[in-house]
Image 1 (cartoon, rainbow, N blue to C red):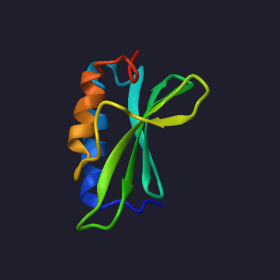
Image 2: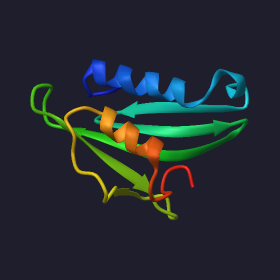
Image 3: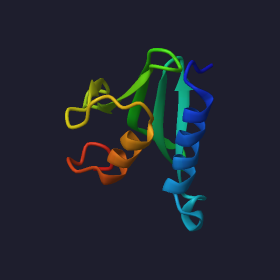
Amino acid sequence: MSDVPGGHLSQIQEWCVRRAPAQIREEIQVEHTPRGTAVTILERRSTQVWPIAQLRYSGNVLTGSWQLYAVDTRGRWLPYPELGRTARPGPLLQEIDRDPSGLFWG
């Protein structure tokens, strides 16, 4: 179950679908798993799954904000240092796409 605004969750889901082009979706999928106030972005290839990023929501629907987290080599989620909190998940998803420090896609 998710405790994040539905419109925001839809935006994340649509981003995941767009992230894997149709011609490779049988081999690679980008998925999201909401749990409470966190949404984890995963890459799935065959039977293997890798965590890519996590977006965490805090506050209420009117004044809430999102923060981006990256996973370290020990599997711990650490706040992404190059971008602060945002009102919507879009800027965080754009940062995952850009991946200027190589923390998300390698």
